Image (cartoon, rainbow, N blue to C red; front, side, top):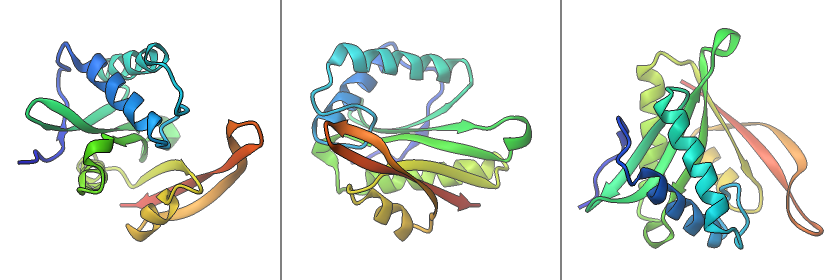
Length: 170
């Protein structure tokens, strides 16, 4: 049975390795997760270490989905401060390739919205890349496209994609 998303408290000792593995698998299958398909585990692990450290420092909030102790999906929120304290950025929504299309991503997205409301936020925002189906995914769930950074992502020589920004008012 699938466990619903939960807010991560103290990360387990295996969290960096689990996150790095999930991140690498998502990248290897073409996921829009900030790394190319030929990424190396060592490089991804550095980013996983930073994410867990930022969570432990209270800079971001990790939400996870696990089954049988295995990390299947993750997303994090980065709350703003000062003038932008009424919003948070949704970062790195990732689902393990073996369990995609089972609703885990939508559950994580919904959990972020619920958490944003609990925190008293007024807006969430995120970016993704075009030609992945993700802009359509977010639009179908009520997110509004607010801008594009044309050719803002380079996947390889002569392979540029738009970075597409979305906002959701809570």
